[in-house]
Image (cartoon, rainbow, N blue to C red; front, top):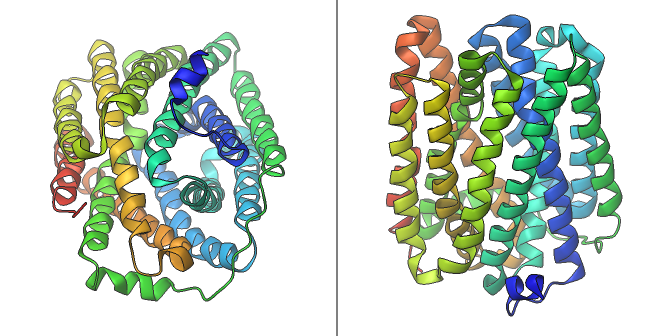
Length: 401
């Protein structure tokens, strides 16, 4: 009855349920390990430049893979593309385990495997989301998936931090990465129960890129994704390093993740219910300013107490932004030229702009720490790039709904 009350009038189909399960398992696996991969590499080298090279490899290989995955999804099947992505993600964790204490010597290899896995996985997942959901179910799906992601974020980091801190050497990391590997294997199994979705027709990637000239809404959405990537590029890894440097403890990093995801879970639960279509733009603007304000809590003093406050602030801001933002994106795509035939190409182009923003962000970070003192340059870089979602909100304000 509680679950039915949550659903309201939403019809929970088999494929919708399976996609949520796979998304939840993926989120738990990533929450368990991804943050700690950066710390694992940081402990081996202690250099910001190594983390930057690793994360740059991820965001370079990801858009290249999106282009290939889009063609395969058009010629083969989206569900098969999803499985390929999960398999590459599993190979990534196998490689981390295999390289062990020498992992920092293979930054581009590891980043490439992860980027390829992300490219295949997210292309297929986003296209399946577009196909399985309808305009009236997208806010529910995005909100519920956000809640599952937050649940994974609550369980994963604190569990991983506890396991890692209980064992000497790298045994704890081996256990955690092995568990992530098992979860990805389970996701592959679940994917066999989703209805096959073959596609036909030409791969219209260049035509959809050119559609930016004809479709103002599409141009605004893609530009917004560039600024989203500009903000998320370095924030994806620098905050976890700040937490570890300030405490020297993986368990403290797990606690940070628990607080962030616990509040985020409540945020997604409320946003799914409260933010209606007519309030989407206002919500994105509010969330963008809240997210930017959070930077000033930590930018000149990243003590653990301040980082925990920051975790709470961004946990409130992200649901307010992302649920309406993702729904607006799919709605614009759904109304675009040849949306039914070219939905895969729309997803690929969106990801190209998102990852271009991430690439620019990390290259700016590399430039800052190469030519300037990192302690002085990083705070100013965070303040500049951190305004990305404010730019997103102003761009989306001009989208016709």
